Image (spheres, rainbow, N blue to C red):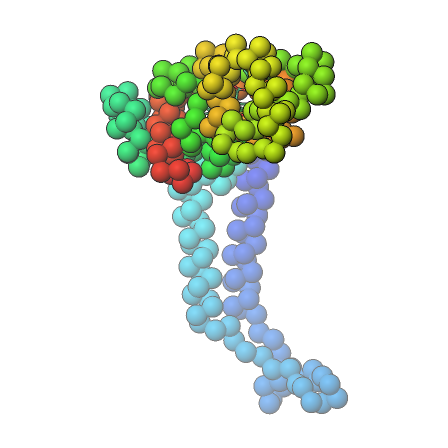
Length: 304
Ligand code: HEC
Ligand code: HEC
């Protein structure tokens, strides 16, 4: 604060106090002239109301003096008069800094704990899961959903089931988080034509134990599947974690498992993008998130 504005604030704050003190002295001394019956002689509402004079009640006077004294003491102890800092040296910035230091100290303990323990132990620690939940909400929920159940519009997978396109080991999941993932499913609509898409769609549809009345389509689809899809999704449709090609037999879908969804994937391809977090999250936060997914995956009830 420049000295001009500091002086400006001090001037008005002091003027205010002086005026209040003056008003006090004046109000206690002034005598309003009254008639013999104790009224001022002012008559209102055609004589129904007459104006009397009362002294200020003692409780009001004492309370006001108390408040005045309090404000004077406050202005000595705390900042309030322009740039004057107060004898206690308190400031809102310092208070925030102290609160942050206390928080950091707590965080250091948590990070230490996370570094020492294996994921399986972290997944059982309520403090770790709570902290991980906050990191999840801030960074992942927008795509993977508030409960980690995924989002078929984005192709962001359910993180609470045990199906992993890129592998479900701690290492594989850690790599997914650190480096991100890019699914690359080519568009095969032109190569296959409408009939071809229908055949393979019918076949993939039945891979999850669902039945079809068009066995002829499914049979032809199975042949074409082996030529065009097996190289990535595997001869049995079990997927390939090295390519991020999902298991097509587990009835767990990135983009939905209706015929239309499957046909869309075949015709137009799919390119889901999972961002990389190496630069944005600490190593401890990554470990906590893996623990969070482990804890969420076990009981199938969503987020812990
Ligand atoms: C911009 C949206 C987006 C955000 C934000 C995001 N993800 Fe993803 N994530 C995806 C998509 C899309 C995929 C699927 C990638 C693919 O197509 O293979 C994915 C894949 C994954 C996988 C691999 C799953 C598997 O089946 O192998 C994991 C694990 C994962 N995300 C966890 C997270 C976590 C934890 C966060 C928060 C730090 C996060 N994601 C933030 C979109 C996102
Ligand atoms: C080059 C490898 C590759 C080939 C060939 C390929 N896919 Fe894919 N497919 C992928 C990948 C990778 C994904 C995941 C895309 C993503 O994560 O966005 C995928 C996704 C899909 C999906 C969406 C799955 C879901 O969970 O929503 C379906 C359905 C699918 N493929 C079917 C097929 C069929 C049928 C063929 C053959 C016509 C085929 N794919 C050929 C790699 C391939």
